[in-house]
Image (tube, rainbow, N blue to C red; front, side):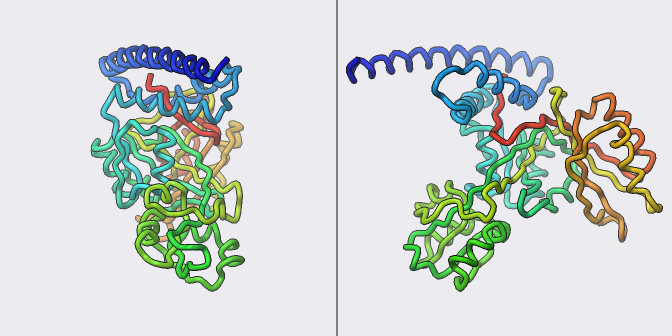
Amino acid sequence: MTLEELRKRIDSLDTDLLRFLNERADVVHEVGRLKKREGLAIYAPEREDSLLKSLIDKSDGRLPEKSIRAIYREIMSAALALEEDLKIAYLGPPGTWTHQASIGKFGNSVAYLPQPNLADVFDQVARRLASYGVVPIENSTEGAVTHTLDLFADSPLKICAQIFMPIENNLMAKCAREEIETFYSHPQVFAQCRHWLGEHFHTIPLVETSSTAAAAEVAAREPGAAVLGGALLAEMHDLTILERSIQDIATNTTRFLVLSPRTCPATGCDRTSLMFSVRDEPGSLLKALEPFEDFCINMSKIESRPSKRRAWEYFFFVDVAGHCEDEKLVAALKLLEKHCSFVKLLGSYPATNRSGEGDTGD
């Protein structure tokens, strides 16, 4: 076929695609009306993995899994925007890793509300000024985000989904590499790039900022300033990426949580987060953990934090396999309560893989 014939073929396929997408939008709109009539949540994270896996399994063409996920993320985002005026609160400002994780989850068609701190993200969702919130919970290199853990103690919100995002830090500036005089970034990013900085720029001062986005703003206006952070910042602030992927650990990943007034229905492959405080008795923590072993429930995470209510009292944050409505987990939690002064279920949500997420909007 000639180039002109191939282009006509593409135009024809695009016309068909647009027609099918509009037909899908009509069906999504009807689903949205049905959900609202029955009082169901518009966003359904329990549907995302099963739908995406089904589409990937059905695909027998050239598109790789990553591309299929990216395409459907935006299709689903448009569907969500049709069903409801969805607003997502996140730890801002725009361009942060939390912003990028939020877009990776909800796409570009919904509204985003950047917040100055984590407490405001919780507050916006609790007051129903935002539909959902996105907050960081832990990094594979630097560990837990303790402020997020602390905020769960008094919050009525639940976890309805999680996001795993590979963190690729880049060296960006408006000047040449040899003209760099100062580095700006968030302290956690400096920690993630500690060895690289020591090897290549051990004499250049490091200035900590409240976020990578704030650092990029400085680098955009200050001669000799450079920033370490995500590639989106270069696009937003007209910076040049001088070197990519400079983090010390190639598999550096941050896990984010999606906050909601309600938790997620069971999917058959779930994770549950909870927090508890044990009584001040010998062996109390061991006794509290025994029910999970008795019922063969895998525990993937445990963190301790001062309760801030009484000296030397601690909250323990735990992630376990299963859904809070599973028979075994229900029984284990009943036994847990016998050994604890406080138990709080933070939510059950799909145990998604690390390759990307997106919701169907249906």
